[in-house]
Image 1 (cartoon, rainbow, N blue to C red):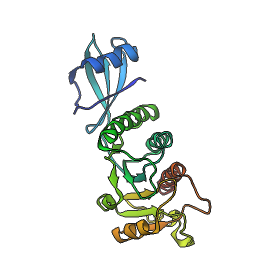
Image 2: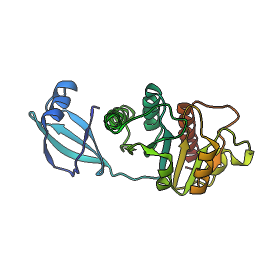
Image 3: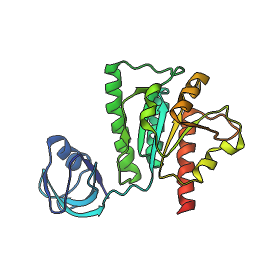
Length: 239
């Protein structure tokens, strides 16, 4: 079934007059025909089924589900090279992340000024929206603006971890923390060159606990996928 995203609050039997861009996407790009059913993802009001009338009218027929978040997963990830970061956004969306917080650390290679950051934010949101449609998610990923590492104190959850390649204590493997089945979790992933020890100290002071992802040193984008896959697996086991 074809899917679209509308940044509006919907209810059953609503009649939506699509704007030019929305109508073009639904009728010209997706080639939706009159009376054809489509799936509508919204930001805050749920997922709906509707059908199109004559261009540019969309009618809401029924609600598929209201948003119910079982576990909030925040991924704080240092900026990495563009292609790898965009790939990571796609995979994080597919693997169930709730919120993504890009940040700058001492070893971050990518440097963005305010103008570039704004353009990147727009592109990243488009990537996340496309990934949401592709994997049939019911919720959109929240993407925060790029921040300095010192502001990660604002994104703490019930369980707060920092993936640290130098952590060798077996009792601090990520699996150990996931067994506690936290309702919300924040995990910080460093850049290509890893975290500086001084940054780990800062994160520890914020309340983030060092965790190991195993014996191998992972690429930043691989580490993100590992973390989200581990959380999904543990949720499946607990479920």
